Image (cartoon, rainbow, N blue to C red; front, top):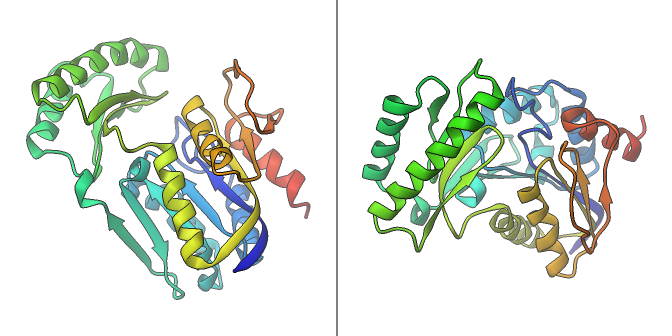
Length: 271
């Protein structure tokens, strides 16, 4: 078993990428991730976004910055809240694994596509995923406008779940810029289980875990680690105040979102 000082685990939206622009606007974050990988310390991404989007927005820009591609074997990606995982081999080639048990019924997927087209096309778009059904804010739509429609589509999606007799295994999930139908067995805590299994298989034992998030569901990552008896800290870069106390340290940078992530990384890994 290889002991390492720490492992960093990042949410993506609002932590590495800009929520509205959906790209990395603080490229130094990628440079710090590379620096950590070069030390032989593991890094994981734990996101609800689709693997195709994650590739385009983060993994390809990251890979383009790396000369020695074999360091990517220390990077593990969880997408679609645990439905999809991805790893790199020693040559830097990406291997994607889809949990076939979590694929959504084609009929339900089609119903959501029709719903968005008929009622919500002014503020939302359908996003392709492999194990979740997702509608996202349409580019140029004010967030306040989107949130008003989001309240309505959550009800419509729940009705579809009920009509499919899937209420016992599926749920709706609303975030700042997206609304999902997902299996109840998925989530950030499911992603953490997959991450812990990966480091076990790799023979890596971090002495501490640092998780990053910008919303309340992201705290599930730190909570899962705490339940496992792990030494964990949570770096919160969101705007909303955390209203309860947690049994692990919460670090809140002065800056928010990607700038907050970068602020923390600079403090941990001085140039």
